[in-house]
Figure 1: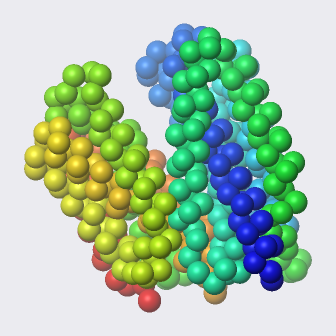
Figure 2: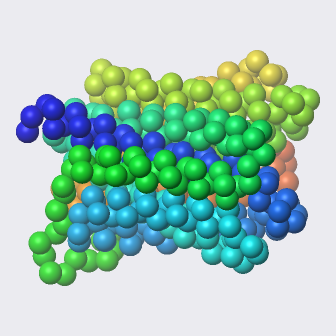
Length: 377
């Protein structure tokens, strides 16, 4: 396999990771506008937003089965096209129930794209003979920043969400037309009966627990970082995003350097260090709830979680007990359960005690990552 072929395939796959990040960030950047247009209260919006994770969770076993059956390339291309189309439908949605339906399928197609792109990434890693997974996830993070910036521009230009999303969809279509032909041609299973669900073995279960623990920490940062700075650090309203900004910068930076670090340390040592950073960052923010120390703590958490999911997907995709797509889907399911259960758990504990105690308990997930990582060979 020539280096030129591998390089083109890597650039093409990077484009698909970028498209997914831009689409998701475009949606999140216009949530306030859509909330206002449909006159949704805070509680109503919270209920509506649940449609995305529900769709994502339901898609996971289907994605693994379908990719194993027909290959990752057609699923990835179709998912990207439908993801962009659904983004436009979200901008069009004339009612709450129409929005819920669009968001459900948006989440469904988003995770179809997630599993298929990561399956392609595993295939490319095998061609390269080294770890390159983190670079793709870094591109997704950078795409999120780009999508948020585009969203800000569209708001300043006074464009409606539908107009904004149509521009993004046009960009997606052009990039797919240019990139699709250069992606890997991975064939599906030749067996006539491909199982819909395969029970993960002990090794994949360990990876799933690591993903679960990591996603609880990520969920805490996404949903509660602003609240923590407002309630515990007691900053002014215009400074509540300091913690999340520090976390995002660290996550992106960690992923950019992730492949190099993984080659130096190895996946297992990297996961152990990641667990230490995640737990240490949360403990620091709990012990010293000041702007500087809390922001530093969230920065350490960002560094800690930045490469856990890429490493988990990379190791899962090389499973000898099942096909890469099925393995990635199985650990993704466990990981996603952490993302769903973590934020409500924090709220429940905070209601019974305090937000600092909640974050202290979440720090235990970093310790669990360390314990599970040491069980990997």
